Image (cartoon, rainbow, N blue to C red; front, side):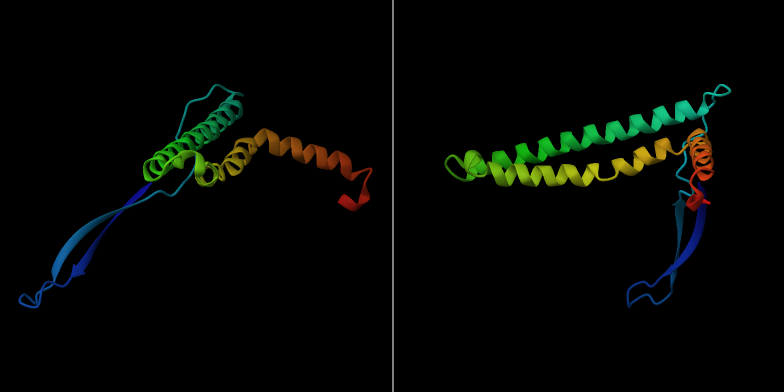
Length: 140
């Protein structure tokens, strides 16, 4: 993570024509890797995998909770607006809540792909492809 400080020029009102200098701190997150953790020899891939799968699972749980929150909010609004409104609008409310939950869940497959992208799985993939390349010449 890097921090850059830049000076920006800002024009004041018409009465005061001198430009004022404003210091702005911009923080840029360079890497999306895991923070530095300490691992025992040979256990790094397993622990990274576990952490990434856990984060993806947490994202799913939060999305489901968001979906229920949206549904209950819309249900209460429908019930307050008209007689039997919660029952009349159940399909609309459920579909809206499901859509909101799916928006949040949509990143989970990528998170799981990152979890499986370890040194060990790359080595294993290479070995499998090399072993298939001999009997199947079109893979060369």
